[in-house]
Image (cartoon, rainbow, N blue to C red):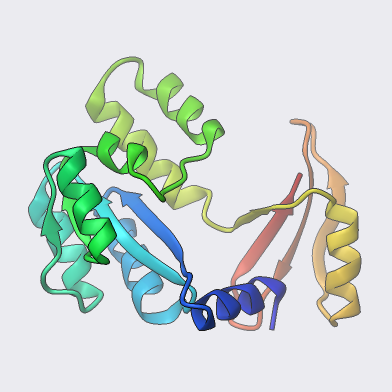
Length: 184
């Protein structure tokens, strides 16, 4: 069992899961929704934004949730989130601004640069962030985390190492076969 699993189990037991909102309900978005809702204790998919509400509903349905609330305004989304009801919206900015949902500043900067003012391009960039950045865990000290992993019997696939783009990383495979990167 890896450190992330223990923290997620603790959050599940405490009734305080990580609240995840997602932009994009294409093939990868549907797979992520299914993973979060059926196989990741300690996480809860609270909202999906997608250009078409039908696709957002489909993503929830595949994960076993048949009746998400449709939210077209900040107030409607906030009401659904307070009630613990999953929500769908066609406006990605609603989920980015929603209380209790954190959007990393670096992700927003990437999306803004890639979008060049276009909402459609922003949604595409948001989809890419979700699809390609999902297995990186940010830590303050990569070397200390590697030592902790080694103490728990985890074999690193690489690192720790300094990357040319200015971050320090290492990676490992979890018991389910997923490859994770830790980075600072």
